[in-house]
Amino acid sequence: MGKQGILAVVSGFSGAGKGTLMKELLARYDNYALSVSATTRPPREGEQDGREYFFLSEEEFVQLIDTDQLLEHAIYVNHRYGTPRGYVTEQLQAGRDVILEIDIQGARRVKQQFPEALLLFVSAPSVEELKRRLAGRGSESGEVIQARLERAREEAKGMDGYDYLLINDDLDACVEEMHRIIQAQHARLSQNREFVEHIRKTLGI
Amino acid sequence: MGKQGILAVVSGFSGAGKGTLMKELLARYDNYALSVSATTRPPREGEQDGREYFFLSEEEFVQLIDTDQLLEHAIYVNHRYGTPRGYVTEQLQAGRDVILEIDIQGARRVKQQFPEALLLFVSAPSVEELKRRLAGRGSESGEVIQARLERAREEAKGMDGYDYLLINDDLDACVEEMHRIIQAQHARLSQNREFVEHIRKTLGI
Image 1: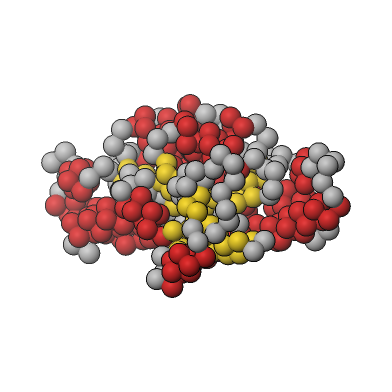
Image 2: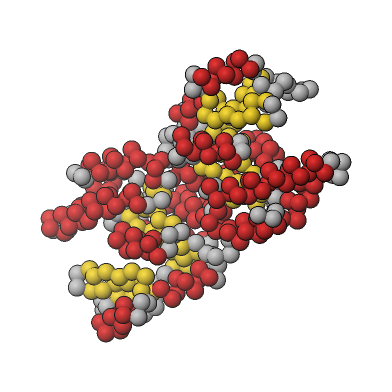
């Protein structure tokens, strides 16, 4: 009903299946636009500029920061990552629902700038499954597993700031639920201000 | 996912089709329980005690108030109306989604007691249609129409307190949207506290 698109921020535990979920959501429905992050990390084999990431130099990235063209940005393992503001606002204004896959700190920053943003947290179906996925296939070092656990703890602490919890048990059901939740957002009062104002004016309020 | 049911409060303009919507919702899906109000108004032809209303004497009604057995209550045209608390809490605990059809004052009182309650506002599809419905079929007196308009103004002022706006253009689509919105609520973080706490405990937080 609302003409403006919905901004949906997706975060979640490592190994919860966020990537697959969103790939499937975009394959099934054509009203979504996936935001592509900018990064200073060099492209890996098979990655394309503008598809997986916008691959930028340190200088280019810093210029985006300085001209307030990033919604949020952060550093991981010596590389910068950020969300270009222009794409998000253009798509929202065109009525498309924009999906951002970012971590909890980024989600918080986006929410400050877009209070109507919908925050979705994706979890593995059970704690046992979560631990299994955090532990990986046994080939990772204890240090890597410890780092993942530490990160999962941070994420678990930050879950309260999220609106919805998606438990990724069955991929198909989870994609449909994500779609329903985002689409329901179009009926939020806040998405229908114009209609409300029109009614009020006509009733002489 | 949540084991506790969702409490959905439905309000809206006179003639917006709330009654038909809810009848259809309950006919299509069996996870809903419709709360039946108590009233001191005498039953009309064809009304059954416990189906349209619980028909009570003034004394019985006041006793419900005095023993805090009503979630909210009000007086219209010299008769009392109220929502029995017991039925609502029992059904929610049994995991059923409870629908309350009440006005904006009642909705506010319910929200104070159940902050997780979902507030839905139903509107006619356009202001023109709303005015047509408020005016009725031409058989009503100017006074009746004025009273309806005045009430619609109060309702339009109170719309901001609602979570969702349902524009009842097409009955079928509106029923499905209402269902989707209420079901999406089961994935709210607040409905999944136990899962979140379990995850945190296991991660050692």
